[in-house]
Image 1 (cartoon, rainbow, N blue to C red):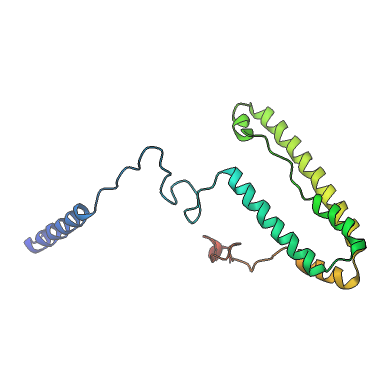
Image 2 (cartoon, one colour; image 1 turned 90 degrees about the vertical axis):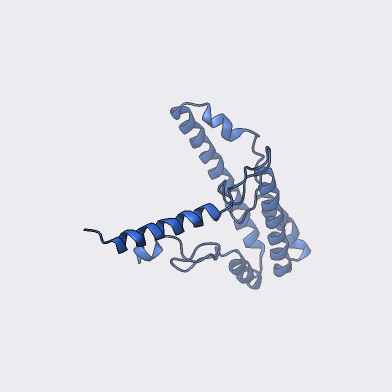
Length: 176
């Protein structure tokens, strides 16, 4: 049996909750054509970037890293042609616009065939990069090789650390 005191306490809590909810401003609808608020479309840190912008940013970042590597290696004029061949091997092929939308129009077996063909293209590009890297590496002095090895080493992360330095990923503690 409920005492009047419990009923009064429950009614008071309900009234406080209702008052707090009504005090919150109603979310305003975004203007037509305006980008969605940060976090609403899966973007990180509120950055909205179309694929073309992302590709340009990646190219700029890659160019900066290649220039820094070239400066650290202190190449001789005789090594320049090997460097040029190495650097040009990293140029990605242009992706046709609407490639992702085209996949949606295909049946599952057709999509699998397309994915397999793209995988073969990536494998061929990797072989080209590997060959260019081996040729360039053969032109380097022992000191340059040491620098190249250190600078091109994939960045490894401690177990449980998020790749971009944002702390552990959800569920990493459970994997222990």
